[in-house]
Image (cartoon, rainbow, N blue to C red):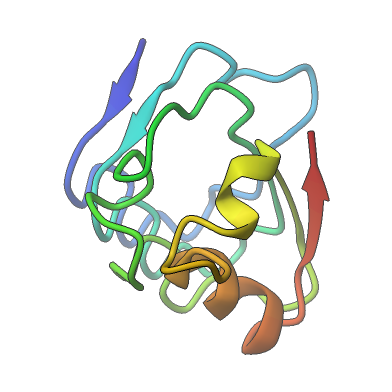
Length: 106
């Protein structure tokens, strides 16, 4: 598995942990709204993302994580700290500043 498409897991309320054992380590791109309304999601590792548009198709907020649980943790490459015109990727900004997630930079 190298790509998770548009709305792939959208609305999957039972999905909670995609961090342990790095099940998505080979995923290089995530479509917009991919995890939207996954209201139990609190942990995800996306260590394999590659390129400025790999998370939601652009550096802005593409609602990849819309309405996930609050207070989670995400692991992503450090590149995404500055890929949005020198600032934090929009989807990660939403997680950190709206949902209170911790970003684990690798």
